[in-house]
Length: 129
Image 1 (cartoon, rainbow, N blue to C red):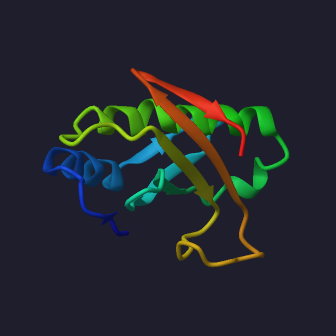
Image 2: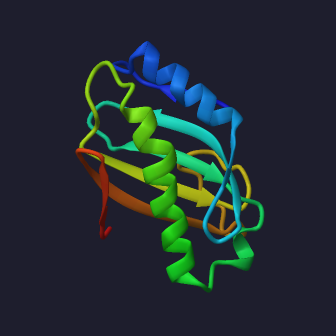
């Protein structure tokens, strides 16, 4: 697993993200997800990429899957952003895939879902793509 950080990420946030990388996160649906990488590139939303091997079994249940992505934003991403020394991003994108994938590479055989959120105070606000 890697932590990909562009310029502008503070040491405290990097350490918090490293802790998140090591953790397995139990989600409301029963899925277990692990952080694959955090990407913070100039002018782009911060991207939090998670892997959940059992994701294909949940992909038809969109309400439960949506709650899982909301929980990742609220319970994993927000606490880490609180440690940011250089400010909180306006927007984050959370992705969940059944297997690790290279960022930006098309992998048609691997189930992947994405959601975007605005960050407002201590809340993640869902945004339609």
